[in-house]
Length: 82
Image (tube, rainbow, N blue to C red; front, side, top):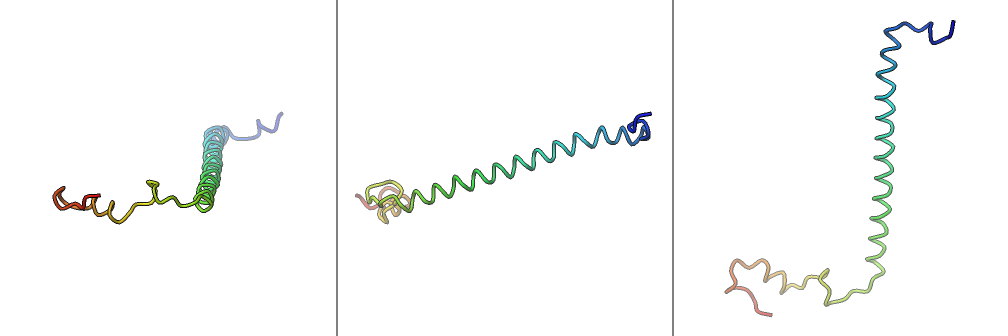
C-alpha cells in the first residue's frame, strides 16, 4: 500500500485545494517583491540621473516664478505678460 493511500480522503481533498492556493499565493508574493525591487532600482537610477544632469534654466523641469504666477492667476487680465 502506497503512503498516499494512508491519508484520509477528506485530508486529500483539502490538500488538493490548499496546495494550489498556497502555490499561487507564494508566486504572487514573489512577483510582488520582484516588481518592488525592479521599481526601486529604476527609481534610484532616475534620481541618480537627475543629480548628474546639469541644470538648464530653459528646461520645462524648472518652473520660473513668473510662469507659476501665470498659471495660478484667476483670469488672463491679471496674469503677468512674459
